[in-house]
Length: 251
Image (cartoon, rainbow, N blue to C red; front, side):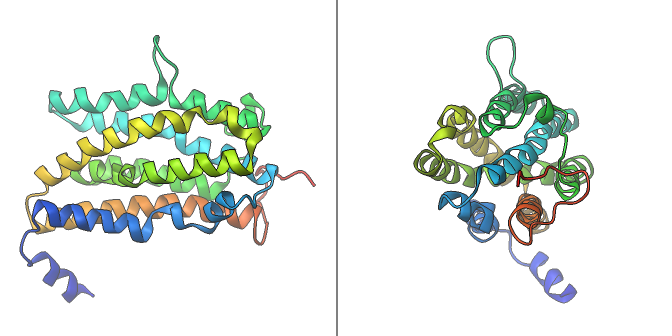
């Protein structure tokens, strides 16, 4: 394995098109659109309680996104980059002119039937979800700046999943229709953010080693998203063993 890694890093630098193709192949293979929990969601097989558990646990991830982006902002000495990146914080936190994605997600959780205050306190979040999300903050804080930016490139794959999710939720869970504003906004925000981040990675991953680091960071982010759904599936689908202190489905 070590010999293979050395050989890969000694390989020629990928062209911009080749690098983008490698990054997109990560999504095709590893993005969480293929997770069994999402498959069940899109087939209308989740109960209201399971959707509550998902919305509550996913809130912890949503609430940490602007913190993640603030960490990336704090690491950049390029004012042009900071101006472009700081919109991400506003998109999720909101400002005096508009509500943000976090507020929209809380509203989604409320529509499932989870109390607003419980959501905001992150009461009942699965430990494995907390650990996975915190690992994402560690990644953007402690790995190279290029890797921190590259880890956000799951946004390249988000739009298709969001579109599918909205269609299937309206079909299978019509009572959720009033809580889908978060996804509507992300249909436009995610592709715009992805274009900027992709261009940055392509321009700044100048060696094959840096390109492989960027690809690896995106893989790590996909693993983090997958791990969150693993925890939710294990606790609320099969075998259905939530740990002490976690949200419990109503019997």
